[in-house]
Length: 473
Ligand SMILES: [Zn+2]
Image (cartoon, rainbow, N blue to C red; front, side):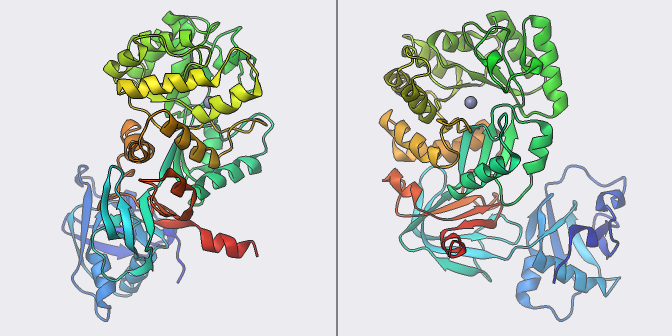
């Protein structure tokens, strides 16, 4: 049976009861009565009158659902059946929110090593995805996949990517996003300069990663970045007043974060401070690019504190004390060593040396700075490639002293925490089933990360090594 979300709306009559109405195109929100409580996080559907339904269908309707969660096709067909009985009454408690129909059936991955985002919690366990694309500890009534010898973990984050680029066809960008998904990346942060239109074009496509974006970065006249093809007048911030305008524009455009490029030459400390201050006023996190020692120092000096510093100094390693200052301030680092490696090798700036980047990352780690996994993957001929460069990044972070478990935590739970997207990043009941299944044990050998078997995004299988092998035949 096929049905779209516009085929069914659910009319809330009062807090205890609702009727199902079949009205094409009707927005269920408009049916919510004015005294409807706004609070509510959960809706609990209890089927009171529904003859001739199998126990599994009943239990699927009977479970607890998150607000704004997706209604499975099974549930939808059940509800559609009930529409035949217009006065069927369902109890509802404590309240109800809009449902959308998606195709999903309950699914278990069995006999699998489970890394929950922080530690291995079971050597031979079961992870089940429910009809709403969430993780559940109710393993009944589910189809299953035997994953003996494999490890399941929350799918990965790449916290520094560039999806679009000047002259890059949209089809190429989409292919890059698809490459990321095949490598187990289901959430990524685009740090410039994705437009709102580009973001909307790719967002909510189940077969692509979930992307958050900064939009234009802030730089100043005469800086290296101001000469980039992707810089335009919207990126130029030459005084404090312009900094205020810059942040307002990004907010109005719907950007998720503010990206500042600290450099010499580049925006003054006063401008960086103003950008940071205005971003805070708007409740937005700041991500500061700093690839030379002096820029890193300016980023650390910013008042108020910036949230994330991305890259590490390549001209010389971090100045004494900067790493511990960063740890004290709780500023997060995204070193992008995979980018440093290819950039230094290409010799664009002869005084940039990769050992400086590596030494800086080691200092950050020793000082206890929170380090996230980001690649800076982009479409330049030498740039780190989307997807696979994350595997290189984790190897380089291991060289910088991080343990495999620390790195996996950084790429999952810690990223979700830092970017405040707590619906994902861990394997626990009620969390969004963004999952990665790999052959082997990446908690001991990071090379196993490369052996991707399956990837799920919001409970939907979006990649499977076997189906991809078949499709190449
Ligand atoms: Zn970048």
